[in-house]
Structure formats: structure tokens, C-alpha cells
View (cartoon, rainbow, N blue to C red):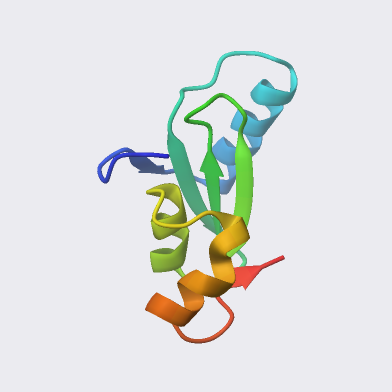
Length: 90
């Protein structure tokens, strides 16, 4: 997961290019990215070279995931402790 300053905001177009490069086994930076598309925040975690992608309803939850505050498997516990409502979109 990324340090607090390492999450880079990118465009939808840039995200598509990153995902395409990753699927072709080409280099993409080992860091976290996020972008907003059609009202949804998408986080991309490539810090370990595995390019995990998750969708969220709000920026704070997206960035918390990118910063390693919680894992997706812990989303219910995260919501109980820090947030209200359904912030994760499966």
C-alpha cells in the first residue's frame, strides 16, 4: 500500500492505458492511483506489481484503501469503525 503522499490522481484515459500496459506485462509504476469515472472513485494499487483495482462511492474510502488503512476483506469492519453507509461497490 502507498504512503500518504504516493497516491496519484489520474484521468480515466490514463487509467485505461495503465491497465492495458499491465495486462501486456509492460512496466507501470509501483504505486497507487485513483480516478473518478461516472461518479465512482476507482483505486488502483500496483505497489506490489499486482495491479489491484477497487471501486468506491467516495474519495475518502478510496484513499484509505490505497493507504492501507483497510483491506477489501475488512470493508465491513472499516465501515463499522470509520464510516456509515455502503462505501464499497462490489
